[in-house]
Image (cartoon, rainbow, N blue to C red; front, side, top):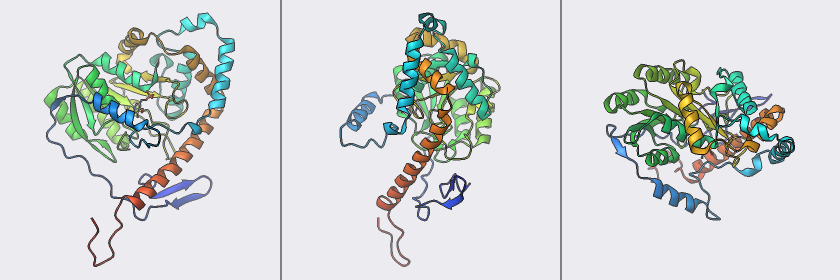
Length: 354
Ligand SMILES: Cc1ncc(COP(=O)(O)O)c(C=O)c1O
């Protein structure tokens, strides 16, 4: 519990240490207080576009976008895999795995979930152009224009853009900075508004960073099965945990197939390669059909190269190093925020500065 709250850190083969900056952590944000959920038209694309444009200006630090620093990724190893696959490429192989994706890559992805405790068959995996395409395909597969979708408040701007593009209304549900979406408010919103889907992040929410506790994930799956509503889960940061084990996604608790789970290699291995995937439970056929009609298939050499890279033994070592770097950066950032942005506690007897 102390580790999850950022108060202590584990150091490999050494023990637990008080985290730097832990003495005066900034106060935890509170859950958003919202008016009763309403079904709202989404109109954000222009604003998102102008903010993204501004954040690409040289000299600007885009604190709102989650782009990992390129120097932390194994580019040489990936290039070697790409070169090896390009040399051995069989034109026929490019056609064999059309639409659902490279069978070797799908097998590796399924195996990794299995090793983490989530049984998954490779035939239930569809490879996509990054997680964003996976999420959009899911949304197209389970909604019709004019319908409504539950989103977290606040949520990843890409979710709002996807709703806007498909002419869908948004129903905002308050989301706690520690535990994720408020399940009571979610059930009330579903019964009042009859949305066509829920879109959320259970692990390392963007922008809140929240992590749904396992019993909440189970309760959400039970609710989805009872109310027969698809849950689109964005788990793009699932591999970037700082605890001893990967927190399982909601999908791991899904017995009835209502969860459409999306992720990618964009944040943890190969940013810019645009390789992601979806496992969509009872909606797999519909999502595969959406994939075929939107982009036919995903870049074949990039898929083969990632499968080749995953054959080797370097991925887990790379992930351990990356998590360590991100943890160090996260601590430095938290300390800087505490130091520069948060007013120091006033000495006894004096009023705090505002
Ligand atoms: C929360 C979240 N979901 C999805 C994506 C898109 O992932 P990908 O680059 O794999 O399409 C991002 C990228 O910034 C993100 O932050």
